[in-house]
Length: 231
Image (tube, rainbow, N blue to C red; front, side, top):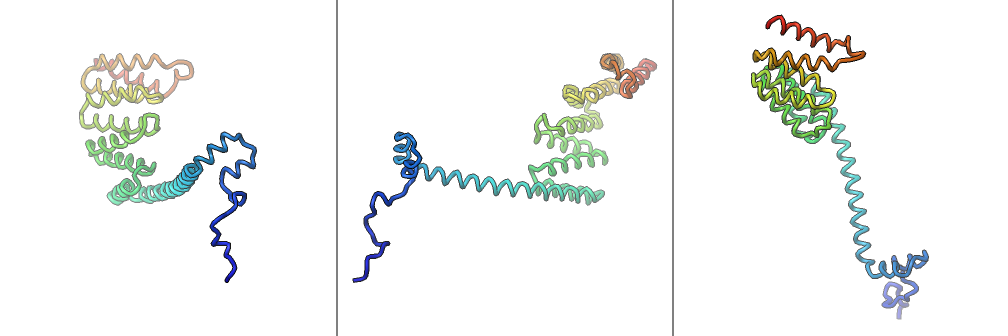
C-alpha cells in the first residue's frame, strides 16, 4: 500500500493549528481579548477583507479622479484656444464630459461670459445661476457668478431682481463695493437720485486713512458730484 499522503490526514494535532487567536497567545495579550477573538474569528476576518477591499477601491477611484481632473483641465485649456462658436462647442463638451470637475465649472462660467458678450442676457444669467447652485458660498467663484447674475439681470432691466443680487454680493466680504455701487446705480437709473446719493455718501464715509486717496473713493466722489449736479 502506498504511503499515507500528508494531504489525506483527517486529524491535525491542536499544536499544529495556526489561527488568529493562536498568534495572539504569543503576544501575551489579555485572555478575555484572546477569547473574544477566538469566538469571533470568522467575523473579524470578513471585516478585515472588507476594509482591504474598501482601501483598494478608494485608491483606484482616487487615481481615476486625479486623471479625470487632469484631462478636464487639458480639455478646458484646448477649448479656450478656439474662438466664436468653436469655443462654445468645445466648452459645452467640457461641461458634458467632465461634470463635477473644476474645469467643468469654469467652462460654464466662460459660457456665461460669452453669452453676456453676445448680449444673450437671459442665457447668461441662467448659466451663472447654474454654476452658483453647484458651489458653496465659501467658494471664490460664488461671488463672481453672483456679480454675473446681477449684471445680466440689470441688462434685462429686471432691476428688482438685480438689486437682490447686488444686496447678496454686498454682504460677501471683499465684494461690498461691487454690491453697493450696483444698488446705487440701479436707483440712479430708476430716477431715485436721492436714495442713490444717500447710499454713495454712506459708503464714502467708510474710507479712512490710506484709503482717502484711493481710486475707488475718487470714483464714488465723481458719482456723487454728477448726481448732485443733475438734481
